[in-house]
Length: 126
Length: 135
Image (cartoon, rainbow over all chains, first blue to last red):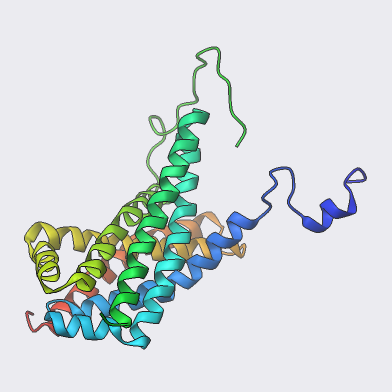
């Protein structure tokens, strides 16, 4: 390690230039998702079969909307990282791999934005 | 991440085709499959939320899709995928700490993952149906 500069050691990113960031973010969102996905299951189970006014009113409550928004953000970060690993494992051609990674990111951000927009619209009325 | 340039078709080591399926291997495959399914399953959540935000007509339409037997089957599968991926994830978090890596512990944890995921899914749906007064 004598050839590594002090800056490289402090950054700790290694030769892949990304360090343990992917691993750490995957774990961080995994732990968050345990609680947030449990919340979603509870929410859907209690709202299954409910009429429109009930569902709309429930989703607009801050104590429901906030965990739901947290789930959307944490869940989409987690699933984007997971799909990235799947793509990198199975798509070997560099060109197709980059296209697939881009499409995966587009999908994750689009789904996330739709969810966030919907929850905020329900929360702030209109 | 490095690109492998293959000029000669070299033989690959056989793995899936030759090894007897083992529970930890099956759980590993299922973890990835359920993760992939959940990835696309977020469309269900997005559809539900955006339909509710759009109005009663759209909400009723999406609700009818979910209430259809095929929709119910997909939701049941989604619940199982979520339960399985969550329990498998907890197993991985245990492994991350360096615990539970003896072969017998790996096997026990793997069996627990599949058994608990099925039990949990059935329990969730049972509670859900009881809440709706349908069970």
